[in-house]
Structures are given as C-alpha cells and as structure tokens.
Length: 276
Ligand SMILES: C[S@@+](CC[C@H](N)C(=O)[O-])C[C@H]1O[C@@H](n2cnc3c(N)ncnc32)[C@H](O)[C@@H]1O
Image (cartoon, rainbow, N blue to C red; front, side, top):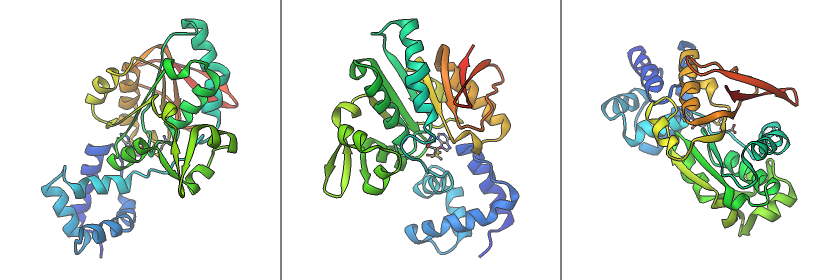
C-alpha cells in the first residue's frame, strides 16, 4: 500500500521536528519498508492508519518506535579505529600536559546507540590512564530509548563482541554469561546512560550537568540532519565543552557552527576538531 501524500508530508515534518531526520520526497519507499515490522508489532492494518495514530499521539509508543526504526542504530566496537587511537596518541597526553595526571576527564558520547562507542572509549581510557576508574566519567546519550537501555545493560552477543574487540580486550573487560558477554563492573562504573535529543535546546542543560566536557564524540549522526540543523547541533555541543576541548565526528563531517569556532588537526589522514 502506498502512503497518502498528505500523511507523507506530515511524517516528514514529524521526523524533522522530533529527531532532526530529513526524509526527502524520494524516500517514501524507506518508510514503507521500515514500518512493516511496526505494523506487525502494534497490530495495525496499514501504513496510513499507523501515521494517523502517530498524529493523534506524537509522544506515544508507536511514534517512538517509528523514530527508532528510521534512525538506524548501526554501530560496532572501535568503529573506524582512528578516533580511539587519537585518544591514546594525542588527546589523553595533551589533557595530562594541560591539566595534570589526576584531573578529571569528562567525555560525552552524544549518539551512543547501543553502547559500543562509549564502552570503546572507556576501554581506551582504562588501557592508557593508570587511574581511569577514578578520573574518567563518560556520559552516553542517544535519542532511542531502546538503544540506551541496551547500552546500559552492558550485555552483548557473541556476534557483537566479534565486531571490533580483540581477544585481549574481551578477556579483560567482559565476563561470559552463557551465550552472551557482560561488560565488567569496573568499566561500567565510568559510564552514565541517558536518553537525549540533539535537536532540542534542552540537551545543552542536561548534558552540561555532567560536564563541561574535555572530549565529545558525535559520530555518524550529523548526516541525518539538514545543514542548518547540523550547525545548531554543533553549537549545542560547543556549549557543553571546555575551551580547547576535542570533538570527534564522522570522517566526512565538516564541523561548522553558527556561533562556535573550530580548528582542526590531522590524525591518520582524518580531522580531529578543537573548540577555539
Ligand atoms: C548510526 S548510529 C551511530 C552510533 C555511533 N555514534 C557510531 O558511530 O557507531 C546513529 C545514532 O544516532 C541516534 N540519533 C539519531 N537522531 C538523533 C538525535 N536527534 N539525537 C540523538 N541521537 C540521535 C540514533 O538513534 C542512532 O543510535
């Protein structure tokens, strides 16, 4: 069944307002394929009925589930490797030089998906900083309640731990429980998981209460937003960061804010951003 054009227009507006996701006119097929699972889950007859239900209850379960389906949670441990290598090779040493070996290090993973990214950061900190357990605090946030709950549980399948973790890291930071792997408590203690929406201004106050941050990871999420919204998000991140704090984005993302100013350093052929 095809989606009614007025309902598609409404959905474009809804997704933009609620998650910053830009759904272009040629993406009606994406909606059709992604909602199939929701029609079954909520026992709804067709796509138009589903959209009308979202329209009646924009903060209801169906609305949240649609946002989850549309914003893909694809992630893995140590994705792209260079941001994590940058932590140990340049960022942690620079913070130690500037603030001393005992100063707290505050990090925000701003689209943490199912937790692999913030746990990878925690593993690098544990490997590189002798007193990481006391010094390092990581805030992990995502729009998706489901993804946040998953990360908070710290339980990963065999398939997930095979994507990115070395045998050594698995043995050191995880314990096996039946068919699954559980993140060890000493690593978990560094992290706080919360839901947060990067397109809402309130995200700044919420994140700031855990900051200000020395390092922010905002990777593979800016691509969903319009250029205008991307700049707003960058400015929001900047408001939670210390002067000269580091920002790691997706490899292709250019970092430009409306207000905030950035400079960049090249590391392994990729840009690492620093707030001016
Ligand atoms: C592809 S994953 C990236 C995860 C991780 N940063 C990485 O690079 O592997 C994108 C994540 O962005 C989240 N997301 C999408 N829109 C968002 C928003 N407006 N605010 C916060 N998170 C959002 C999605 O829920 C999803 O978990």
